[in-house]
Structures are given as C-alpha cells and as structure tokens.
Amino acid sequence: DGENLLAGYKRAANILKAEAKKGELPSGDANRPKDKHGAALFDALKIAKPAITDAVGQEDYSKALTSLANLRAPIDAFFTHTQIIADDDAVRANNLRLLNLISDTSRQIADFEAIQG
Image (tube, rainbow, N blue to C red; front, side, top):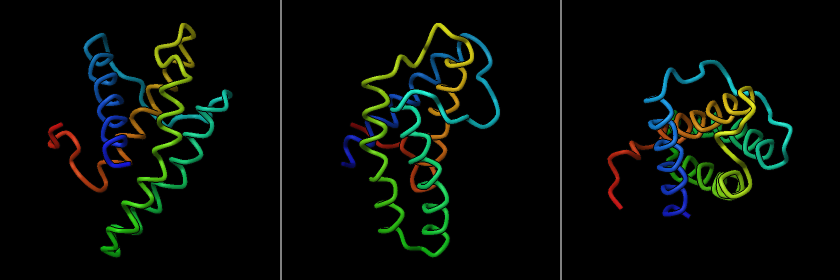
C-alpha cells in the first residue's frame, strides 16, 4: 500500500508542478465532484485529513499511517477513471484542488518529496 500511495502522491505532485508552470493553480477548497470516483476521493480525504491530524497530534503514527493507507483505493480509482486536466475549466480547477488536498493530507505525516523510488 505504501508504494502505491507514494506513487499516487508523486503523480499528484507532478501534475500540480506541471500545471503551476502554465499559470497560477486554483486556490480555495475543493468541492465534492459529481463523478463517482472524484466524489469517493473527496469523501475519503475529508475523513482522512482530520483523522491524520488528530493521530499525529497524539503521536499515534500507526493510526495516522492507517488513515493514509485508506486513501489508496480512492486515489488509484480517481487517477484511473478521471481526466484530471478536463476540458471544463471548473472541473479541471476542482480536480487540481483535489490533487492539492492529496498532497496536503499526505504531508501531515511525511515529506514524500524526499522519498526516492
């Protein structure tokens, strides 16, 4: 799971970096997408982020990592079934906000940019 999560994080980070080179990334919070894979990711992130924050605050890193691991399936499904850089500007912006939420949630535990492989 950790290897796949790392791959998902890096994929999100790479897309965000590429899009940032084209212009300013959308700011603000992501909205719940209408498609089922985007909605599942959004829901999972909204559960995982506060759970990870609480677990890290209590120094319960096992619980934090378990919460992060629960994101594997929705992240994989999102990347498999969603055109991230959609033709619809509003959908594209929201997808980029979701990618940012993946990054923010993951970075609560570790600096995934520093992990090689």
